[in-house]
Image 1 (cartoon, rainbow, N blue to C red):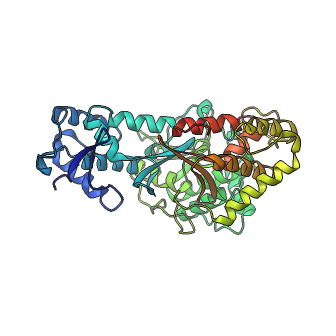
Image 2: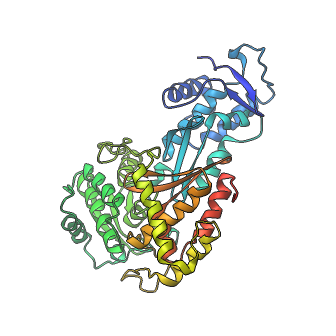
Image 3: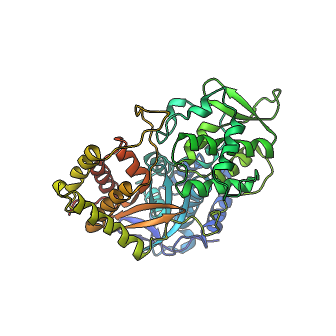
Length: 447
């Protein structure tokens, strides 16, 4: 397969044809097959070899429109390969923006989109690096690799995501985790928690709908997930002094015994950048275990997991109505929808609203319970209204979660509303700081 025609445009070497879900896989396969000596195996590490390939084979080439297309640098296929590495190793998907298809990358600290073909053009000109692009995006938005979401032998308890802090019940040697698992079944009887691998999707639905509200709920959900892995894949419960309850697979004679650390799993999924379905599939892949594939791009209700689904006009109007109601209720704070009013919103939340500390963490201690209440909904509505008043922004659905997405000249950034607002209520976030961070990430300014 020959490369599609390329031309220099706006300082970037780009291909005439567009990349997207319909052609990216075949283009990437063609490119990898053409250069077998560089071992392009779709791993993140292979991007360093891709940089080496471009440097050794193409860096001295100056693209010319007078050359036949087959003799020009294969920017489109290299961009397709970069896209496939992202798609195969990270939570990413194609979305359609005003200029065509771009790749969305989703992480615990938000997300962004980028054009893989444009990045490839910069790399062929020596202005960028495939490996550096991958490292920069995954680091900036805390995007976990899918092959690292599932089982891990050890992890540092201090590096757990700060959204929930430690989960005491999963750290208590005297606590029977199966009792917690049964507690999950009893607490959510309308969900089909039947012990099957497919029931892990039900856990994702429970999380998406905001039903896991404290560390005890998290412990129940984590224990139920552990029970599924233990019963379905011949695992056994074990207690580790540092990591708490884990599921151990294989025998003690195995050189590398896989261990599923429940605290690590829970902190990836409640709330976070992974789903229990993804943890399941990642575990099967990393241990070469047979089982159903759950994270096939659809939610448990079959409606997909796309960031491209904007909320309805009625839902967006409700956000603005709540913002107006909040401003009317607290006139002394001059909530006039200006960016400067976000400082006063921080003051209002800190002064007037109480944050419900969990029983396990009465003093705060860095733990954040995700809360949904009329107060948090009103404050979220106000933040949305301020951003939408001045910028190209919209609220999108992802499962049961609303995400504010902001677009600017430097790309797209997002924030998970319920998680972000809960952190602000807990004193571990700031509305004005978050707004300024979104502007910095997208290249926007206060207008």
